[in-house]
Image (cartoon, rainbow, N blue to C red):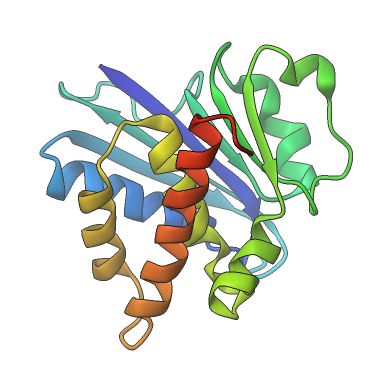
Length: 186
């Protein structure tokens, strides 16, 4: 089993943190092999940002995502650049308020979930910054690759002290949205 995930957006959205959490959950808490790679522009905020996670039950021979099973798009630039890489039947999660120009011809062979993720995070926790953690929860339920328990532990390892409960609240909202999406209720 080899699963590839792509997280993309711009600096400051927590793209890299989200990928680190997923990789940690797989490797540390589920006993799987995982490799996380990242690339970002020279700007710390606002520049393009991309991270990949490869998860396998065998040693990983190539650390990059060639045809992601799951992808997250937090910006129009990321969507335009990477949507075509997602494998047929794969999952694409789109921050719909930040990706206004969609490509139906590329989406038709994917399972696309376009939601106002930033708005939902802000309504849930009072902070739009928790959007990445909410999305990790959504991705966890939709992909069914990792367990909720391992993701929760990885979130607690990764978030700043004092923000644990806030981030768990965002994560659990993501789990809830993912469950609704799986049932066709979104």
